[in-house]
Amino acid sequence: ERLSTSRHYLGFYRSVAVTAKYLLSETRLEARSLEDVFSSAVCQVVDRHPVLGCGIVGEEGNTPAFTRLEQIALGGVIEFRRIDAATDTEYDEKLMQMVKEQHSKRWPDLHLRPGWKLTIAQRSNQGTREKAVDAVFAFHHAIGDGTSGMAFHRSLLKALNNLPSRPISTVPTVIKGPYSGAIVPAVEDLIQLDISWSFLLRQIWETSRPSWSVPASSKPWSAAVVTLPHPDDFRSRVRFISLPRALTRQILSKCRKRETTLTGLLHGIIIAQLSLLVPEARSFRATTPYSLRPATGTSVEEIAVQLSALTTEYAPGTISAFRAGRADPRAAQQQIWEIARRFRLEMGAELAALPKDNLLGLLPYVRDWHRMWTDQVGKARSSTFEVSNLGSLRAELDSEPNREQNELNRERKDEEIACTVSRLIFSQSGMVAGAAFSFNIASVESGPLTVTLTWQEGVVAEGLMGEILEGLREELVVIGTGRGGGGGEASSAA
Image (cartoon, rainbow, N blue to C red):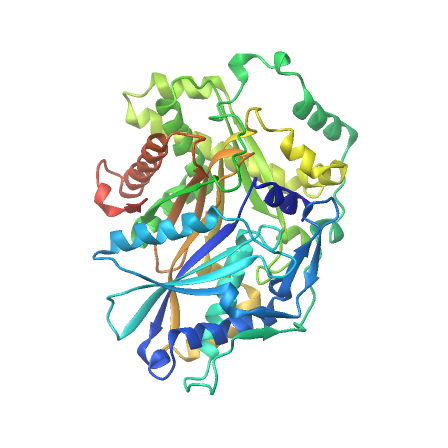
């Protein structure tokens, strides 16, 4: 938590967000208002996840802590907004504008209120039979990781489907404690993170070595240096693309045949794009967060921070090969698959080594987190880009903890389900220090795969970000369909 609280306090990182599109049946809303339905459901979610009933004290120091809040005013954590839009594309653009604004804000008065917010966005002129709303769950990273955002929406979906159809006498306006259960312990309290002397010394050297000891030819390109604007001037940027489910299935099938993963494939495509679009770059470095829940035994149902990250290097030889073969799309695609396979092997080795010599085990060696962040201002960023993949919401729902709910849903297959989720979008604020830009991936079964691209305004050119995301979309279409063109099969929004 000290990592997240210190960088939030300084303005280095604002929030994570997972946005789910809910489809609510007419029967669910015929006797209850949208505000009533979601307010009642959120009360159940907060009771299920006690960390949502906490504030944070001591962000300004090295000993921050969660503090139980006696009550939470729902008006401070739930907002209902209508979006005027003539088309789906216009609606998505305005939705992303709303998400971008949230990612540009810090969480105020954390000792008095929780560091999360649920914004319910609804298109103004939609029909009445079925209400589609986007629920933007944004939260302080000390509360949870991306998987926690999915856990929130699973709990919210369950609560919405279990609400009585009849209206209650009064709509709740306050959630009062105490909240049931205990907060999930930190990773270091669940597993022993052993650090060898050789690993420790290597990391100290990598972070403190003088710049003259690193040849210019091997320094990874990472856009502008770390720049900390005034808190009121910070802006996050967000763009996203959406790929239909049929195309996504084709892409995943190709990945399995090539013995790799979607995350690895994205690495390959991104490196190919950067190699051609950033001619001055000689090498790149990527960061890929991964979940520690399998190692700690923490369920995907819980809201917690259980993350580490893998760093991968892309050397000058790899970049030169893409540039030399730019006239041969087939050769370039082979290189993309080779990067994807290599990434899977590196990630496999990283996971196999757990819990020994993991970056997370170095955190206790940081004595002053605030100074650690501020010392980075004016220096090169640690990596070029980040790829964070949440996976599929339905895949999570098919996990062991949800078996009872899955069986109940199957028993009710001939009945009308009151609420379903048809789309998931994962995003995060731009990072003042860390990766120059981030690709964030999520999907829902029977729905699209979405990829957002996020960055701090001014760190990298807007035009470059647009070209990279469009190039990623086009290459995914080519790989999925096995043919060139076909750009109309995927959509995008700024």
